[in-house]
Amino acid sequence: MSTFSNTSTGDKPADPYTQKNSEEPSLKEKAEDLFAFIDKTKFSMLTTQTAKSDLLVSRAMALAAKEGNGFDLLFHTNTESGKTDDLATHSSVNVAFITPSGEWASVSGHATVETDRSVVKKHYSPGLKAWIGDLGDGVHDGGPDDPRIGVIRVRASTVSYAVSKKSVIGGFVELAKGVATGEAPNVNKLRYISEEEIKQWKAQ
Image 1: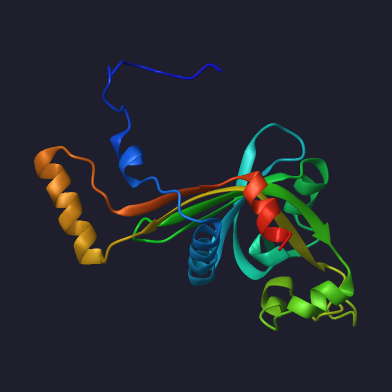
Image 2 (image 1 turned 120 degrees about the vertical axis):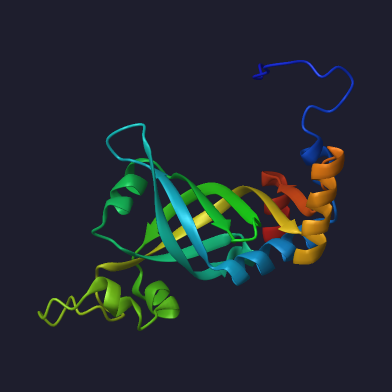
């Protein structure tokens, strides 16, 4: 498999940060730490491929719920918006979460738009009315029966994430040490969850 390289570092790691921070704990620990981070962060960017080109577009989305033992991410949507056109053409998506402190998660998978009223009502929030709007026709009122309200379900295929293993002060100390010595700081839990691991977790 070809890879991009711009130099040779001999027998020394070209990416010491990744080498130093990568972890491979149990699947249980990886999954639970990921879910705790997602629940804490809640807001994400959903990236889709536009329906009429090969360009990508990202939109801010608030997590409505998790299903599938945590690996199905659900978001409310207006079914008449551009993102549903994108998903009807290209189901591959990425959901990215990030905090001001630099912790992040990248969830790659496939999305579907669900309009079943029982699913919508299960996760409905009154705050949706402000985003959807009331058209005054008795049908499109922003309520749980408004046919414009749907749910985007993202079924995760793979996940990469980095969450802090140190306090804010500890992280600054480690970073300062790295600046002074040139040694990569050991500050994050850098982890990967494979498609096979997600299947295994969801089957429990």
